Image 1: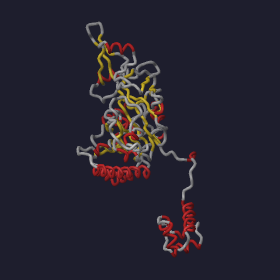
Image 2: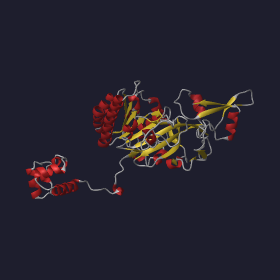
Image 3: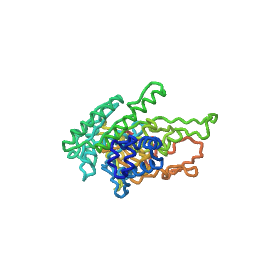
Image 4: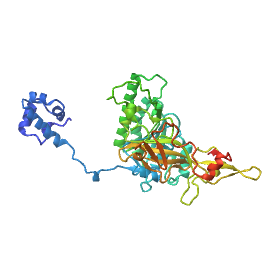
Length: 455
C-alpha cells in the first residue's frame, strides 16, 4: 500500500496530475478512501475516479492460476497406507490439521506416530525433518515413541530418532503465544543450518490450556476468542513462512439436546448447536452420549482439516490375507510384559477339559475405533475403522465409507450391513458394546467359558 502511484503505468499523465493536486501519493491513499472523497479532493468526476480505481486494481491484481499447475505443497505419510489414501496422500505442510476426540480415542497415538514418520527420507514418504512436540497436560511418552521405532513396519532406528523431537510442556495460553512467536522461529532458523530442518509442529492438546472451573461468562468467552485468534494467527504464519505441518490435538464437549416443545424462539432463528453438527461431530455416533469438537466456532474457522477419532465400543476378530488373526501374537506380548503400552488387541483364556487349566485362543477380538474426516480443504468427508496396536495406528481394510453414506435418507442410516430406523423410539446403541464377529468365540463368551484380558 506504500507503493507510489507515480510508478503505475496504467495511469495517464492527466490522471496523475489530478491525483497529485488532491494529495494522493501512495496506493493506499488512492484505494482506501471513499470514491466521493477522492473526486472532491482531486476535483474530478465520480466516473473518472471509478475508472482510475478500476484500472489500478486490474494492474495490481494477481493473475488466476490454473488448477493443473497448482502446487499441492509437501506431504508426508501418516504411517498407514489406508489413512494416507483417505487424506489424499498424507499430512500436508502449511495448514492446520486437527485431531479431535474423547480420551483414549487414539489422538495422541496418531500424533506420536506423525512425529516419527516426518523424519523418514523423501523416498520413504517422509520429509527428512525433525519435529517440535508441545504438551500441555503431560510429558512426552518417550517409551511409546521408542516402541513405535522398533515395531512399526515403516519406521527404523536408521531414520527415526528421539533426539529429532524437541519437546516442552506449557500450561498457559500466554506461554504458548510467547513460544510460538519468539522461541520456535529461533529454533527453526537454528535447525535450518543443519541437515534436519523442523517440518512438524504438534500441540497436544490445545483445549487443555482453556479448561476452567469458573462459570462461563461473556467476558471469559471474549478473552478466550481473543487468545485463540492470536494463537491461530501465529500457527498460520509459522506454517506458511517456514513450511511446517501443524497438527493440533483438541478435546470434545458433551452436547445436550433440548426437546422441550414449550421453548419459544423465532422460526427464522438459526441456533449454533443445530449448525455445529455439520462441522463439529461425526455423522454417526456409537454412543448415547453425543460429543462435539471443543473450542467453538472461532477455532473451527482456523482449521483446514478436522479429523474426529471415536471409541466405537465394537470388537471384531480381524484376519489377514493368510487367514490368521492380525493380533495372534497378543498372548505372547501379554505374557512377556504386562506393563507395556495399552493397545486394542486382547487375549482370550479358555477353560480346557484337563484339570481346569487355561490356554490361549489364537484369534483374539480387537477393539475397533472410528476415524471421521469431518471437513477438509483437500478431500471429501469420509470415515474408516482403525485399531491401535503395539506397532502403531492401523486402518482396517475395506472399512472406508463416505459421510453421505452415513446420513439419513428416507429415515434410515446404512452402516455396512447395519440398518437403523430413524423413526424408532429406541435409544439403544446402533452397534452393541460387545460385537464378536466369530460364532465360536461369541458362544463361548455368552456361556462364560472365556475370559477377556486387556493387553
